[in-house]
Length: 358
Image 1 (tube, helix red, strand yellow):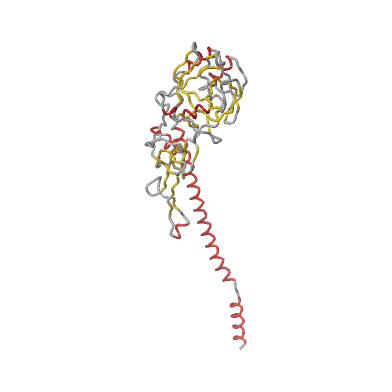
Image 2: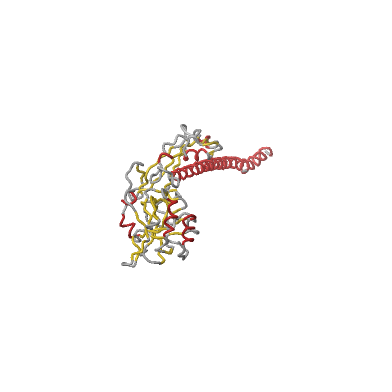
């Protein structure tokens, strides 16, 4: 009897004990937690690889967009967007070279798709680079990078997720950069000390930078009968932010450009009636492109006028005796030392700092 009572007590203690259940539950919870941690590590690795790919795509797109710009005063290149520098890219162009210099998972990227064309700001689509230029189009480079069984060493492989049937994941990233539009800022040394009026540029319409046969005359011949300078409605000298009327100042500005940054909204000093010797000095810039401000107001008298934009002038001829400069407004010129910080009108000149669009 005592033996039976003792067995009942031991059975009761055993049945009431939870130590084994806790161990089992703990094991299950730990397994689940380790699984989540493992999956989080796989997802973190996937995120890291994608960010590395995106960084390479962004760098490649920016390098390509920058390469669309003609070098300053390149003979035969000024006036054109240089698509053939970027496309097709067999690996020796700026886009794919830049992409290859970026590593993903410790290895160089070897596969990418490079496209060029005009990004349509209105319809958000990339048009062929052979498209006739329209106001809402800007030159762009689009880069696509894939990491899968056919590209860049295969998909991203998982360790922990493979235990639940997810062994790997394909990745794809895309980036696009473009020449962003008309310059609103000219860095130190980027501008030439001549201005044209907004009214004249807008009246000139696009034919003036689409047709190099349409000439611009900038002169300072004083006409006693009108008490004004003939041809000054087309252009005039400026000393930028300096109020100066002397030849040495303008000569130095021709050689070295604006001494400090200028931008849309700055009021610059207009000085008609410059000495003939300046037109002789300007001869060294024949067959070169110079960046000049566009101002809003009457440029026939000494005054301060606000900059509203920038345009590129190709200087063809100068005449010291008759005091004039002849040239044409250049189309599709990417002006070095410029960028777009504000909403600036497009007068045929692109800002030189490309920007990411997506």
